[in-house]
Amino acid sequence: MRYVCLIYHETMRPDAMPGGEREAAAAQTLNYGEELKRQGYVIAAEALQSAQTAMTVRVKNGRVSTTEGPAAETKEQLNGFILIDARDLNEAIQVASKMPEAKVGSIEVRPIRESHRTDRWMRGG
Amino acid sequence: MSGDTAEPARQAVDAVYRSESRRVLATLIRLLGDFDLAEEALHDAFTAAMEQWPRDGVPGNPRAWLVSAGRFKAIDALRRRARFDTSLARLAEDLNTGAGDAAGSNGEDLEDDQLRLIFTCCHPALPPEAQVALTLREVCGLTTEEIARAFLTTAPTVAQRIVRAKRKIRDARIPYRIPSREDLPGRLDSVLRVVYLVFTEGYAASSGPSLTRADLSGEAIRLGRLLMALLPEPEVAGLLALMLLHESRRAARTSPAGELVLLDDQERSLWNRAQITEGLALADRALSSRRFGPYTLQAAIAAVHAEAPRAAATNWDRIVGFYEVLARVDPSPVVELNLAVAVAMRDGPAAGLSLIDALLARGDLSNYHLAHAARADLCRRMGKTAEARAAYERALVLTRQETERRFLQKRLADLPK
Image 1 (cartoon, chains in turn orange, red):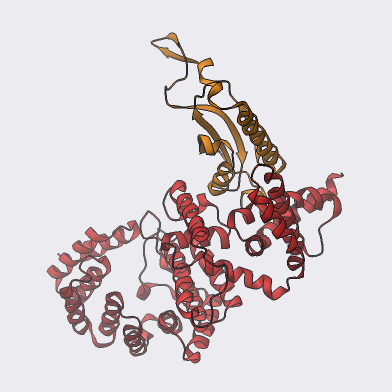
Image 2 (tube, rainbow over the protein chains, first blue to last red; image 1 turned 60 degrees about the horizontal axis):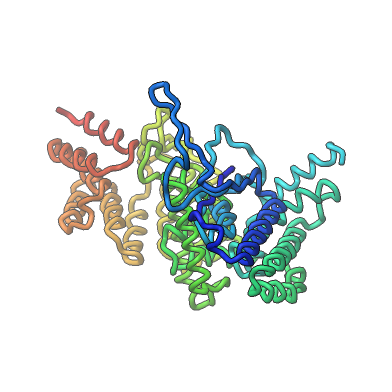
């Protein structure tokens, strides 16, 4: 089954973390991303620019309205996503639990709404 | 690579995954000492197989290949991660020094791994529903989503149980081993309870639209057979016999319209003869051991039914006898209720009714729909229509199962006005 891991963490000022740590964290993220690819889990993965760069679009009574910033003003903001192929929810949780971002933020694991079940050995035969 | 050699290899990987992945996992958990690490290693081993088998051919001993590939992949992954977490470096090297053991494991050890896995998943320190979920996922290979569907619950609920159970196993350092001789009876009870729970959930779904969920019963029987092969104790044989004998009636248990058909009214030619033959032999074997328990006794009762060519030819005296022993070995109000029904069949409805009334008066079963349904049935047979009606109505209020509800409504409607 496919799951999307939505990576959230608190908006951070660039100076909140010393340069060395920031680089180490980035290297760790990259490292785990490579590992997940090697393991054949990753379908797609992207990091997002900060929530301040977002625009939110709504159509009310036929009129387009745009607001600056993310759709929901929450403490934690969406920072990236990884779309993975895992055997089941517990395997997806296991993959998510090793993402370095899980230590500083939170990862929401959501199954993709599948219209049909494809069968591959990874999906439990 | 050419397509005509790749495809058979891919199918071979599929087939090996279905037949061997649980055994490989069981061995990897022992070698790596951790569920999550082992599951990851299993995944990596199969990913490697998908890559290499189409190119190099399927190895002579796929299971050994997968175990060794999984182990090396795990060491590899730990070493890479050790760059960020130095504590993992030690673990990786420790695993690496133990290298020879893995390849050197003999067949017996590998079979024992499955038993270790079963005992760990059914460890009494884990909550019962976690034991069930963990067993179905790790031993049977069901997915979290499949388990959730089977138990009419949500995937996150099941996932949470599994995550917590694994954490408990790690934190409480629950050992990955087969219990010692003296601990075996208690620990085996826990395993058998899990298997039987899976079976009954599949056989008579406790709620929901359909009376039986064949997948779960089938899984339980598969588990029973696996246990029988690994640990042929009398109660294991008894439980497997019980499940097979009940399962043999599946086709006769519901009408073509999906309505419940009681044992007495079932078309016995629909009973599955192969399952009955196997069940009877297992029940005999368990009974003759003289070390049997409640599962064997229930199997013995099911065997008496299975041996009767017609409902009227049932040896109720034998059934009453087995229930009397069962009520001593494993006393419960439900066993007493069944005893009362058997007595009614042997000695007439009045004898059964006085037993059921005594039981209901004690209050243990006052909210159990089958107690009221049984009482209603006996009253009906004695011509006590008003009492029968009241008891059917009480049973209807208490049942949560749709097919049973329709059955009770029909009985109620059939009462003389």
